[in-house]
Image 1 (tube, rainbow, N blue to C red):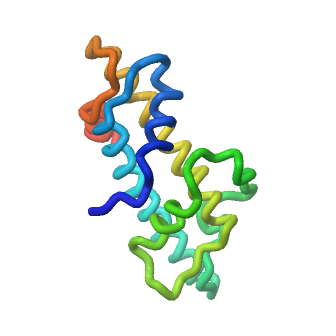
Image 2 (image 1 turned 60 degrees about the horizontal axis):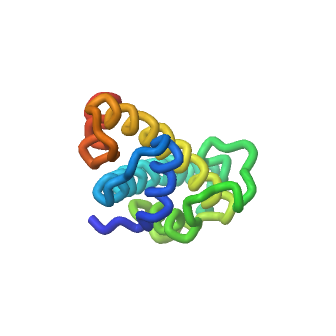
Length: 143
């Protein structure tokens, strides 16, 4: 599987939740892959909602978002999030800009939650670095 999401913004998300811990490249890569999977799943659900409404364009409300944040308020880049949204849906669907921003916001919150927990796991293991195993442990415990 190719990961569409660049690792740098994911690394930044982990760092802002790690309270001074270092972040391994493998941790950023692992979290990016999980974020991508989650985004693709959400897009499938959004496409089903759009289809029910007779539309081929995914809108922010299809992702359960009532108010879309400003594009500058999210750290995840919108273009890769658009590619993530299209990974597992039919090519006939389009993704509106507001839907892309809404999905980026949702995925960033998701990544923040995982990163916060992974940092706790790293501290619990008495390590100074958040590692891929912390990301994996989170998913084995909580999902």
